[in-house]
Amino acid sequence: MISHSQKTIEQVKEYYGKTLQTSNDLKTSACCATETMDPTLKAILREIDDEILARFYGCGSPIPAALEGTTILDLGCGTGRDVYVLSKLVGPSGRVIGVDMTEEQIAVAQKHEQAQAQRFGYSIPNTRFLRGYIEDLRSLGIEDQSVDIVVSNCVINLSPDKERVFSEIFRVLKKGGELFFSDIFANRRIPAHLQQDPVLRGECLAGAMYLEDFRRLLLRVGCPDYRVVASSPVTLEHDDIDQRIGMIDFTSLTLRAFRLDSLEDRCEDFGQVAVYKGSISGHPHRFALDDHHLFETGRPMLVCGNTAAMLGETRFAKHFTIQGDRSTHFGLFDCGPTTAFPRSAQTNEHTQTGGCC
Image (cartoon, rainbow, N blue to C red; front, top):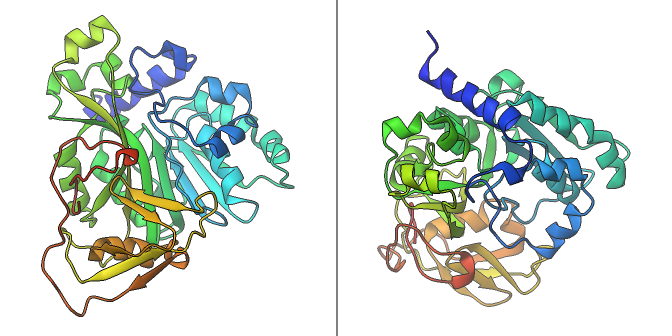
């Protein structure tokens, strides 16, 4: 007898391999990019083949800053749109690995590999596409602590075993490495009978994570703090979809989390100060770590211990000066009010999700 997990995987393969031919076939905005894309990224998209773009399904723009020379893993890469954007950004000394289980999708990605490398001016491709499951990266030969950054665009919600996915992510990340992903989240747990609906699953709704369960899951895999970078509501524009699951509010969130041993499950105040040097490419005047930490170049900003670690013990360290250490403790850091579904970074509103703020 086929297991529930196997059935879910086969349903997703069918939906993304055969049911959907282009992004226009989607019934809701859940698996469609809704964020305003940076002009630099838009320029790169103009260099990517139309066939790749036509079959792109994503709910955000999980492309972080400071990528040159890094090794990046894209979980559920589909036809490779984000892989190729990242390929351009990491440069010839970096590399990008895309993993997807859908044969039709990965075939499109691999088909354009040589042509895209030439278009970017690379003598050999800095990309690699692997067909497999994001729950089992080890079987694909992706070793412990071998990746600087893991990205994913509206895919983890489709997995029937999310805890295994996040365990694998933090296994392959190097110390100080980052998970930066966009996905669909719900304001309550999805009823079991709706989780088994193949259309709701394919539309990225049935597998949406309840935000509090996500927080607890990260704690179990050793990550006590994550940050919201951007958010936007999901609209259920199809009457039948709304009738079935419209009682639940869905939000597309772009989140970041780091593999750091020094993180705590609350924001603690050690009197530390962070100063941004303005040295990240494309961010000469300010840099947003998340939806409530916007660093202005040269301007000191009081930060909690977790934020100091995210800036001072990662690839961002060379772009910041961190003043102070953890030798003196002043209690909890004042992070502001808590909201369930925070607004995007551009609003600069204080929220608390996960361990901090």
